[in-house]
Image (cartoon, rainbow, N blue to C red; front, side, top):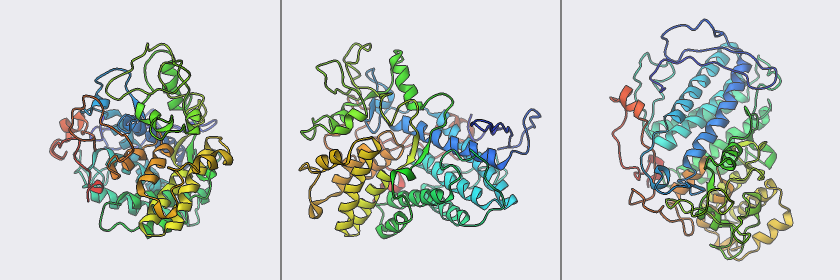
Length: 473
């Protein structure tokens, strides 16, 4: 189902005693008498925070092969080989969530629930960005009942970027206001009703958004740093969500693999980034991310486009691990982290010629990631003192920062944005075997359902190696 079809959404509180169920019209066609017509705002918030994290996972899953974190176990897969795919379910899920958020924002405005509205606006900005970063232009200004049409126009990529910035700024303003509606227990699945943490997250997402246009002439690293100053100060600030209908979705991928439903194979590119192949010495974080194979007790990845060369039934190549603190049954899905923010700070400070701040943030980001994985400060220091890591303040480059950030954003939706911004300049990052494009992939094709139902507005198809607006000089 696309945004062009009639929609009724049930707001289902997914935690303990939260059982409120309700509905809202996306495009009004008919009534559904089985659903409550006036959902509680706190119930809507529960749904909104849950969906934001699950959509983050869904997008991360789509782009993980493009980032070469994962690889298909079979040769010639469409995602490995840069063929057009049709992830319509993710498009639908994102637009359902955006529609829910518009309802939350509208209801919160009517009831004077300023802080609920602020959270809604920040989550709206985040997920609108997920859409724009995958497909480019997309419906927004005429969607969600703003205009009475079944065929909303597509806003440009730059318009969507500006809309995200406005939503975040307005959201932060609303979070700072007193609210007439109290939060209920467990209504917020990300920050547990902690408004101070939401303000930090809003600023973290603002810093990420401002940094995304690093190729543009209006890029302002000092504005990035100003947002960072108001954002995260430790791993405890991370925007995490750990309430699932079952287990962490990455762990579910790993469980499928254990049951021979082959998925979650780690790419040779990512494994070689960690196992000493690229840099000469094994990164201790690899043991907290995956498990060794049976082939000589070593780490081996799968080459994108080639498929696995083992038996499929033994641990002869590396997989997503249920033993990792990032992908265990109870691990949270992370939208944005302190370690990522420190790398954004390092990049922006370097580009503002504040080399001392850049180098300290670079080191702090590595330490934060080691701590997140349960490794010690001594292990982090030992790693940092390797010659290719401890390059010295005067010699720090953007490529050094992206090398480390590539590990930090493992299985995060932002990773593909960083690879594109840095033109895939990760050491020994190669095109997949038998790729259908001459260059690295840069975007997705629009869902076929959009072309059939809103074809007059869907932009003409371009090659999938065509850069997005923010990815161009």
